[in-house]
Structure formats: structure tokens, C-alpha cells
Length: 217
Ligand code: G6P
Ligand code: MG
Image 1: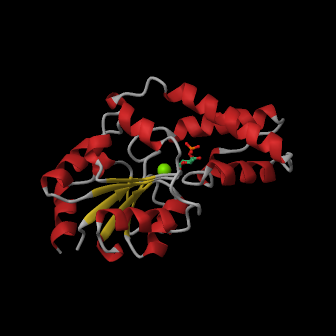
Image 2: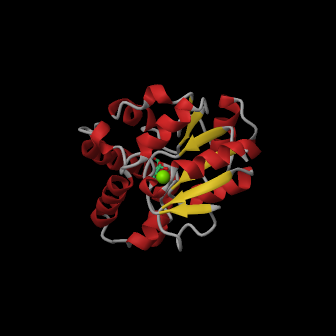
């Protein structure tokens, strides 16, 4: 029985995953190499530090500690320039309908994101008030697939892990939910997110009755 719901942010609530991709791609290109969209699946849900480590491995490149920190800052500035004009219009289709339903049913909602930009994004999109708890990249030390972020998110809303449902668009995030012992719903492609308990191509595909059943059985 589901008694609490945890949402990932990027690629689940807002379509910011594409902006992370563009910003990382530019960073790699500036260093003289490129990576594919398939490789990018491995960056989804992963912390900023871990993402840059992976990209440098792909390019067989290394940076001094100073350069590493500088590159992360440049990437983030670039990313922020893409999201300055984010509004409620950028909430992905079908998301608000599910959030509103959960709110009516008094189901606590928590955020479980690796991003350090989570709060400003929730503010810009007008969603911050809907969340009973927010756990983001500023609160955790271990990157997904480590379950830390979801375990804290569950604890903050006072729901046992086996009663939590996680919405995720990333492989690492689905794995984190599974390791945490929570139900996972993947938002994206079935063949990428095959480890999830259920996969939908978008929130628009999710029937309210489907969620209703999870809350009662
Ligand atoms: C999310 C995204 C990743 C991003 C990470 C860190 O999990 O899926 O693409 O790299 O958060 O985000 P930040 O905004 O802190 O750089
Ligand atoms: Mg995500």
C-alpha cells in the first residue's frame, strides 16, 4: 500500500534533463570531444561531480582539481542560463494532475533529487508549496544509485520505505528506489528503464485509477 510519493525532479517534473545534456555537451566539446545521447542516459540522476568524472573518462581526459571545480561552475552557469525563464508552463504534461490528486488524497509528497538547483526550479514552476519535504543535492553525500536521497525523503514525510512510490526518469534513480525497497515507476523508455516496477512514456499515460489502486491495495 502506497502512503507517500517521492518525485525526482529533472526529467520527471520539468524537462530540464535536456538542458543538463546541452550544458554537459558544450563542456565536452570545449575540451575537444563529444558523447552520445545513449551515454547521456548514464548521467541522468547522477550528481554534478560524478557526471564530470564520467565525462572526463569518456574523453580520456583529466583535469587538475582547480580546473575540475572551474569546469563544474562553467557548466552550472550555462545550465542556469537555460532555466532562467522557467515557469509553470514548463511542468511536464500530466504531472500537475497526479500531484493534485495525491494532495486531495492527503498523500505526502517528497522531492528526491540529486540537483543543487532543485529549490529555485520548484519556486519558478510554482510547485514548491505542494511538497511536504525536499531532499536535494545539498542534503546528500552519496549519488544515486545509492538509496540515501530516497531514504531521507521517506523519513522526512514519516512514511516507511515499503509504503513509498518513486517516480524516476533515470536508470540510476530507478536502481536507487529498488535498493531502497520502494516501488519504482519509470517515466521514459521501457527498454532503458526495464528495472522499474512500471514504466510509462509520460505522466499523461498514467490513469488516476492506476494510482488509486496503489493507494488502496
Ligand atoms: C539531476 C540530473 C542530473 C544532474 C544532477 C545534478 O539528477 O538528472 O543531470 O547532473 O541532478 O544537478 P545540479 O543541478 O546540481 O548540477
Ligand atoms: Mg531525473
